[in-house]
Length: 480
Ligand code: NAD
Image 1 (cartoon, rainbow, N blue to C red):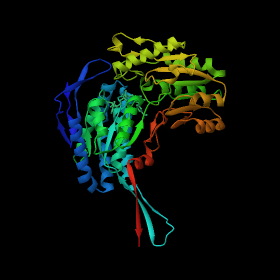
Image 2 (image 1 turned 120 degrees about the horizontal axis):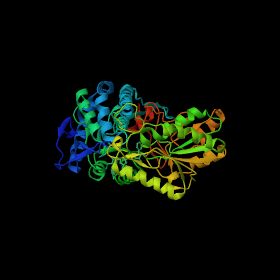
Image 3 (image 1 turned 60 degrees about the vertical axis):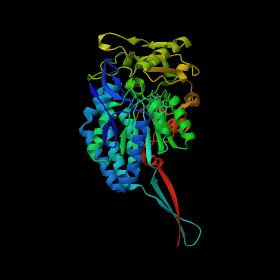
Image 4 (image 1 turned 135 degrees about the vertical axis):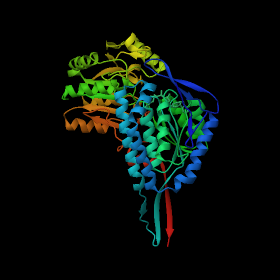
């Protein structure tokens, strides 16, 4: 079993605590790697290394040279995609095919942000006084703290890493305690690409022991957090107490809205991908299906057919469509929500059980589950389950769809399926969500903003706008 060390200053070091904890394979239930248990002393070491690198070699490099290093990292990620994907799939139980696709896509993040590094322009602003000029420069902030959840450790870190480094910052990355290995594997490539020591650091450990001291550290200038809204609120409070800039990518309970004029075959596939990809363990899961009344029964038949044919099992095997739930606490949470939904009076038409037997390894599998007769005031309609559980609600017309779609505290994403341009434009305007997909679901790109309205977060990742969120705008006044 591999034993990892902390990655600080391009060196592998033991944790101050002298302790390691096991990383469990969600399919087999076996401990497959040992992860260092960081603490506040390690946080200080990592942040100090990042601050020294920021004041030293990193700031001395030209933006083009910083960009070239990101290109090199992208190329190494492509070269080692299989190794990285195995690490992530073993840690969080995601399908190997899915993770491999994500890792290859991640390389493009680094190419994109490498290309942007020397294209961050300021401005000369017209001023109504003779002989006076105003210049706006964009400057990096310093040390960025990246904190990420277990569902997509590499990809979610890549957004932050690519953007932060492109903007000229240095970074300390804290992965989820459930999925640290893939980031340590990525760190080997950081050193190989030739980043100066301290530019990228990785320290694993628990939220209280590493996450909290990291965001409170006086030398951290910017916090980039992705996770649940409960931890997100704590991070926001700590950021406020220490007056730190922060972005929060939090949970969701996204409506996927199907009108009667939609291409129902395409919509049915979009609904299934929207909820059951990664076993529903994605922030953008289309976990609330809103069906126009006239097509309700027919559409349910279509999705039941696809759901019942899904191949569930070992995530490492090709052809598997749904793998295990990533962690034991999450498995228990999902099963609990299934019981809550039944008690609330929702009708289970598919799944609803845990799957056991040799083909289901250590027994962390939940059958893909569909509830109909769901009312929007039920907990199963309002709360994030983060598992393969779909809640189906009915609506009458456009106004009703918008009302139900927005009647929730989250606002991460929404899907709309219709052939009417009018409906598509109307809903894309009226839905209070950071992303609206028309006749598709789950499309994302590093080129375009991603983030949440309402309780789904604060700030945006992706695209040029996100780079400016990792920078300070400085206004320089010049009198001639
Ligand atoms: P989580 O909030 O429990 O943990 C996320 C990270 O925060 C972990 O690294 C954890 O150690 C750390 N943490 C916990 N408490 C902390 C504290 N007090 N201070 C600092 N750090 C702390 O989330 P999770 O269970 O790992 O992930 C699932 C959640 O992530 C879901 O709600 C999901 O919607 C959300 N998510 C959001 C996005 C997005 O882009 N909006 C993407 C993926 C996942």
